[in-house]
Image (cartoon, rainbow, N blue to C red):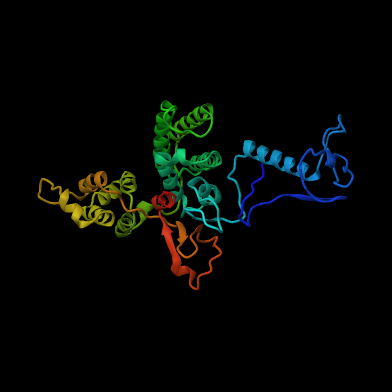
Length: 356
C-alpha cells in the first residue's frame, strides 16, 4: 500500500497519461497490458515473450539484483560520496528518523583512516569500544563493514609488524564478547544468522593464532642506530612516550635503555600526564628507602582511573551544523567562522553521540 498522508513531502503516486486522461500507475493492470507499445516495455524472459513489464520496473529490479550482489560479495566498506554524516537524535519536519551508530560507521571512511598513521590508534580504540558493548547495536551492513575494517587492520599489522599488541587486545575482548553473546543467544539480540557469527568467531581465532605466531625479522642496518645516539637524546625519546608498555619494551632493547627506562623522574612525568594529584594521594606507594615508587604507582592508578587518551588525529564534530567528519575531508558548514565550531571527538565521545 502506498503511503498517504497530509504531509506535503509525501512521495505520492506515480501517474501515466492515457487516452482517457491521467491515471495512477499500477503494476499488472489490464489497461497497461493493452498499451505495451506506448510504455516502452522491455523483454525479460526469452522463452515467454508474452510476460512484459514496464521499463521502470526492469530498472528497479536490475538495481536490486546489483545491490544484492554487491552486499553478498564485496569485501570492502560501502562507499559514499560524502565522507561526513549529520548527527540527529530526533525527527523534524525537515529530516525524518535519526542517526544510528551503525549508519555513522558506514558513512565515515574508516577503511582509508587505518592507512594513516595518525588515525590508526584512533580507529582501533573505536573498534575496541564497539566490541565491548555496542556490537549488537550495529545493523547487518554495519557489522559487515566492522569486520571488513578489522580484517584490513589485521592484514596491515601482519604486513608491517606494527602495533600487534593493540590488535591482540582488541581480538581478545571481541572473542570473549562473542562467546558470551552466542551462549546467551536466546536472551541477547544478535543481528544475523547464528552460523554467520560462528564463522566470524572462527576467523577471529585464526587471526589471533597468526598474530601469536608473528615473527618480526631482525633489521640489518649499517647506518646509525638508536643505541648510537648520545645518552641525553635517548632519554629525551623515552620522555616522549605516553604508553607505559612502550617504555618497558624499549627498555628491553639494550642495557642503557633499560637503565633509562627505570628512571624515577620518567615515571613521575608519566603519572602526572595521565592522572591528577588528588589521585596520587589516595594511592601513595613508598619504596624501602622512603621514596615514592612512581612506576608501581602508575600501574596501580591505571586500575582505578582511566588513562589520558592521545591521538595524532581524530574525528571532529561541528556544533553549528551537527555534522561529524574527518577534518581533511571537510563538510558544508554555513558558520561565519567554521574552525571555532569544531570539537575533537574521542572514541568514547563518538559512542556517546548515539546514546538516545
